[in-house]
Image 1 (spheres, rainbow, N blue to C red):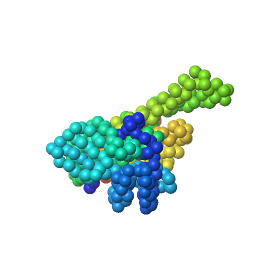
Image 2: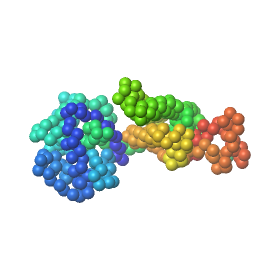
Image 3: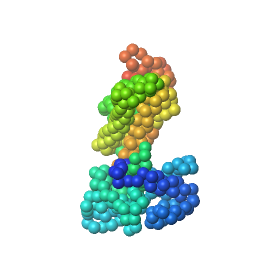
Image 4: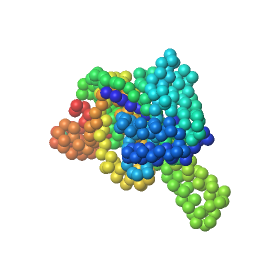
Length: 366
Ligand SMILES: [Zn+2]
């Protein structure tokens, strides 16, 4: 099985021409649609590469086909890797070169439309780690995100899932209110159980502070005072709070995914992931926190699951998605009733467990 992992590397803005990259992205979109447009003012070498990719674009993990006309598509680039021992892999006419001997990445011709223009970046630790794990960084793309230039690298690794040692690691995403819950199960017994990460309260409070400042800014604007120092400060604070909320949720998703993957590997566990009803969860979060915050929290949880699966596959940990209920009896399927102290009881078969652990019991049914 081939596993993939990707990274985005921010490119120095002053060394990249965003408009040039924008044009290349538009041409890539056309290439996906089987149109070949040769523009005289762009380097031939870059354009050749664009159309040379057509046959193999489907194999690119990053390269999802653009859905709309004129949507910006990331530009696939040929890659060459030069290893410490001098061995080379990949295309000799590549526009991106990973040079492990000098610990740099060279990007040619695609940052600015000048003959022979190239930039160098320090080799990210991520690349060295993936290669150290037996991966090969095979694909590269360049593109804009929020109008900032980025290089995307995709590592590929051939991996066979390991045989589970008998441990099951159950991960419940639906208990988001208290973070992500996980339980380690062995021979039908819960060995350990914990809830942590993704604390929605902190994110909600940051976000609401940002909204409050934005409202204040709105009022000042209507009064024609948007040039005042107060207004500028409110605007700056709002942006800062909002981006802190985004960063926080991203960091927690990354931290939790990494932590749980390490746990799975340490125990050689089979991983059962809650197959979330995203639509239902979206409604729930929107009802409780309002549309914008709800969407933000949902995107954090989705990102967590995506990162988790990507890393489990990369390290060959076997996993499965499964609906893990918290109000349905794992023994007989009957509806559970909640008693004092968040204890759930089945009136049909007598099953009894703390509410947060019921999903872990569902995972045990494997
Ligand atoms: Zn029951």
